[in-house]
Image (cartoon, rainbow, N blue to C red; front, side, top):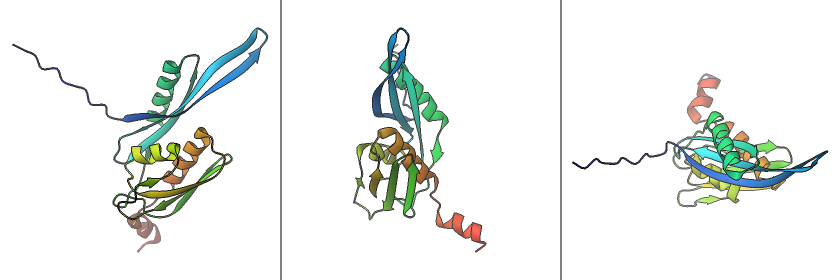
Length: 160
């Protein structure tokens, strides 16, 4: 009898947003480390970002993915786009995300596009202002996505 090998389907999709080489100067010389910014999402409605630092890329990437899974955020959708215009800030980076008509796609830089795709948004227009560092753009995007509300939530808050 032949046993069937089942392929494990990963629950979350992972993407690397940016890799930086950082150095710490000590008495013995410079210590080089790699800083990896990573995003994890289920392509339906949840996404998270994480940062990991280690001497090797594999270890820092693994740390970033574990942190991203802990920092998951539920993103509100309206069909394939976002419900309303939203702006997020982090450090020197600001990001404006606007809803788009069906078929537009995601018009954004790589960092923002990866995060929006991982949370299941298919149509959106974005504009980034200020810093273009992957870490700050990712955090600004997450802050913007966490501010999203649906019509029903707003009506409930207003008592309508």
